[in-house]
Length: 230
Image (tube, rainbow, N blue to C red; front, side):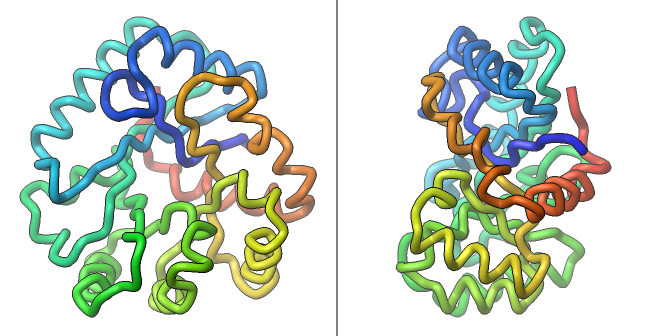
């Protein structure tokens, strides 16, 4: 079983998660020392700020710099944390926001109840063969829990942040999902910066999730089976 951190901000100079290549190397050292095999780099993509082509150019440049420095584990897949907006699917080169080599896209929900247009976008993606992976659903349990349930009933999958497992209310709801379905397919640290303490919950998550931990990692491995890794 591979240990997969499915949500991390480790690409140098792309967003506020990692300032430069030195910080990136420190982040990867933390991951490696804690036996993380694969990390999915998910820099923020905001449709109201970014264009897909310029975003991808910046990401590719960052990846090129990282390739010249990186050694051994973890292996890295490159995607994005894409903020859901109405009409997102109409953006030029929209598919380039998926994890490279796949049709899986990590979707961040807005911090308010969803509108019809948001559901239309998710329906379009699902109908056209995309895998919709909802980022850190634990953040929305108080904001729009019914919307999360609706998206999952439509066929969206879910990623949880390890931090949420150490808060009683969110942990309780996460286990409810785990007991009722296989919709939770990924676990992430959502790592920003290079403090070792920022990674402790991801490392300890297996003790909380117990038998569900291996199941989540196995599902994540399936999602990344065709992904480009370096």
